[in-house]
Length: 254
Image (cartoon, rainbow, N blue to C red; front, top):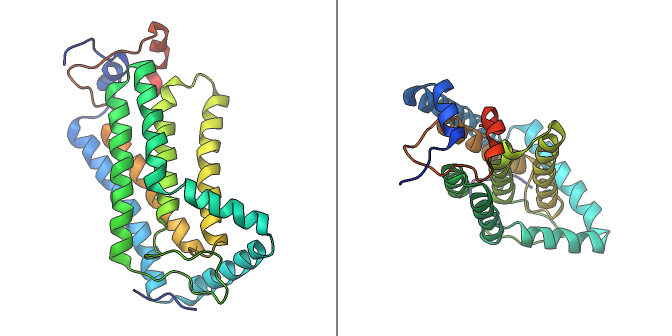
């Protein structure tokens, strides 16, 4: 088993405050470009190791998939749960509830530009992951008794990159609304847990190697954070304010 290439309104107080402290447009774009380049370089380096059949990584991938699928195959109830998770966390199905959640945040808070940033970033990350998969063109695991038959290429994992990117973007979107450290920690842990669960799902079904899901998670999180570095501090001429005046206390989190 080998890896082979196959306007008008009030100013948003949060934006106004950020504009006074954030670097200029050129600085923001430079930071965003540097973060995006670092993310792409990390994923590219891992992809080259796989493509060149680096024995330690390829051997680990193969052993991990064999052990994970054997463990799952012996537990029919677990297989049913894994298949259900695979279905639910496919990007084309996940986009609707995620978009609805973003629009709900906009409706309840008035954070228009932040919401559109989150939606745009999610769609861009989804598209970029699909392009990366077509560029890498690495084969999926080949197993004697596969649990799931999945078409397409393997690296990076689309499920893992989509889940990582979209949960990260949602956390960044609602970050100014989280009042306590416990709420912030809960949001981060929840996003990380969904990403890890999706990564395990892909490996245990035999649809991906560990390197695929790791690269997908790095790609998803990295692209969102790079996008946020470019967005952070951008102050549009007009934007809607938060509906609750007390939300001004969240300015620093913007």
